[in-house]
Amino acid sequence: MKFAIVGTGALGGFYGGLLVRSGQDVHFLMRSDAEYVKTHGLKVDTKLGDFHLPNVNVYTDPRDMPACDCVIVAMKSTQNGQLASLLPPLFGPDSIALVLQNGLHVEQSTRDVVGPGRVAGGCCFLCSNKVGPGHIRHLDYGKILMGPYQGMDDNEPGPSLERLMNLRDIFRATGIECEVTERLTWARWRKLMWNLTFNGLSVILDSSTDKIMKHPHSRALAKSILCEVRQTATDCGHFIEPEFVDYMMEHTDEMVPYDSSMRLDYKAKRPMEVEVIYGNAIRAAAKLGVKAPIIESMYRQLHFLADR
Image (cartoon, rainbow, N blue to C red):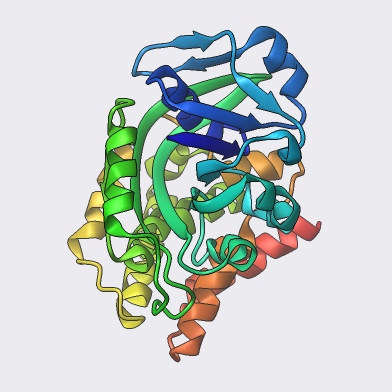
């Protein structure tokens, strides 16, 4: 397959680099790192085995890129206003998009550009940072759970499961775990269990995940948020088993010390993904008359901190 990577940061650089290493035809759209990577290549430090790709296909203008079978949208959702100019040159008649972004219904921005039936979403369980120009450091995990995006009401056609399972097998050949689900919105809510809890807490408390988990009061607060997210998802029709709360706590205890992407954005004075992670979840719940007071409180605190 021919892949386009739109957004070659900690996520796009990691997965795109793995695809190149496994023999796929990959084309990277870059901005600030483009000239550096053209000269020096792409370097990935990973538990799967460090590697350096001296020659990769790098572009600064999507109009110079070939149409690709799969366009991976890996940039921050705060930049989704650019999709209308970035995506059309990359799409042929049978192309699909795989949106690897955080948030609920974050795929809608891509769907609005390329149309229904051509968009899949992927939940990435990944600890990875960009540590320098063309240099990605993968710390832990990496699993992708992907499914067809069926619109805001889950009733549109999406890419076929057969096509996504073919994509799954390609990702598995890179060495990472990958699965396909028919229930993308349910998968997004399960991922939001972690994002709604620890992305926001890391900013509000100005702490990495390990510090949050080691203090008794912040640990108790994290568990309260996890419980509220689980109940909110269930009340919205996406049942999550109660035991998943303890699983998320244990999973976070076992993580390497980690700064969430939201905290890294906040510290660097970049826009944070507050709306797609918190705002979309609150609005989806409100449509069904479901209240989430802790999540809404975090949403308002994060907007205050961002505006300050």
